[in-house]
Image (tube, rainbow, N blue to C red; front, side, top):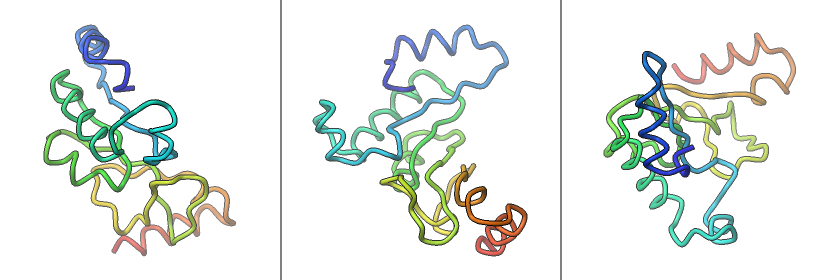
Amino acid sequence: HISSGLAALKAVKKVSGSIKIVGVSTLTSLDNKDLKTIGYNRSVKNLVAHQAKLAKRAALDALVCSPFEVNIVRKIFKKEIITPGVQIGKKNYDQKRSMEAKKVHSDWLVLGRSITSRGNIKKNIQKLIKSLY
């Protein structure tokens, strides 16, 4: 997690060898109100932008961020972006910063319950592919 700090990120990257190191930014289940409750004074967007700068300074190989921060992160962090909180259709489950797959412009999309929890997995994957093209 990027919140572990720059020294920890650099240390992990230093010993990683050929293993890619992926930094996780602010969880998609959190919003501005949650951040304030746990002690952060920045908005989600500002915090994730700051975390992207740390990931860049630590030379991480990829970064995880919600669909809402992809554009901000892409301006700062020029490597792979992985995006959870992606769904098929408009059902939101329990994530506060999620978005329909067709609206997410990330290198990698992470989908879980929208594929596995509603009926036939194969049909849900076909539905996802159809919605993207």
